[in-house]
Image (tube, rainbow, N blue to C red; front, side, top):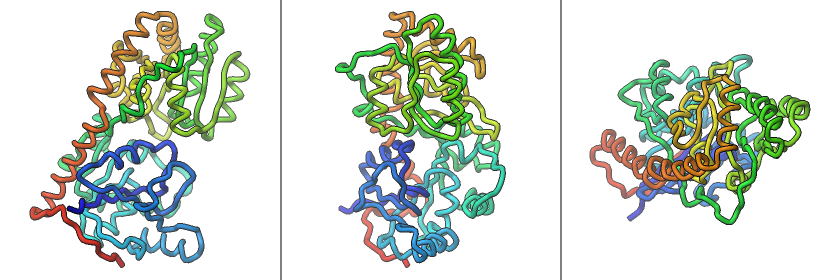
Length: 386
């Protein structure tokens, strides 16, 4: 029997930082995942046989196809009819809404945080303007909104999302991929991975590491990621630290290797000036799944991912002294580190197993389809969409 098609929509397919989208889609069992994006990007490669790029080469005809899709929901490139559309990020949900309306199929939108919390400043592009214009219609016509944490769900309610349409659902971690590596020896490394942007709090970590290295000079800071603050952060590190390395953006396999050899994972996220903050933090869960204890600020949805005093230590947001003390505690106390490491692995396997969480997602799919089409039949035929 042919599986129903869940069309996974993202503006750009697919940044290295969004492996969680591919991991979730590829773990679907009752549905076939196919991908559609307006543009491709150098990053994660999705299955080309199941991927459609609307603006594939940035030629004038391709740009027209992108505009027709954005404005009217029209495309001749998708030659099948999906059963549902699952868009990641609310702004992407607003862009794909006319397409869902044209096909008369349910739209499910996962909100990740930036899309809900960010207060846009400066000049706005057409996609941002469309998003703001269509947001009331999106609230009305989307069948389900998925919040990646309880923290984000509360923020969505504050911003007018309809309560009866919001469900909290954790995406989950591939515990086969993110697992302890006994072949790699731990080293005195504090690891940061993430965008080098205000909300990730890397400057707090650099300044805390200056105090750490005066006491434990062998401890090294490794920073993986890129962003607008990289030059600024490297300048501060050069002035304050004696043992550090900036590696830039790296593929998932390289990040996993550093997680396996590091002693502590620390991304001390904060609330940014534009309202952004960490709404869950998949990378915190990935680190714990590999037996890597976490030190961070208790900010946003991080306490939902990290169990304070069981799998890591969380400082009050902005309290750099407390952050430094927590780092020193786990660097010095081997027994506590071992305890947190083992409990972290169990915590993720028990609460954030990708297989279990994806089955819950498929239940959301089925329930949404049953509410939309009581006669839902999983057998789907290929239909040309003009």
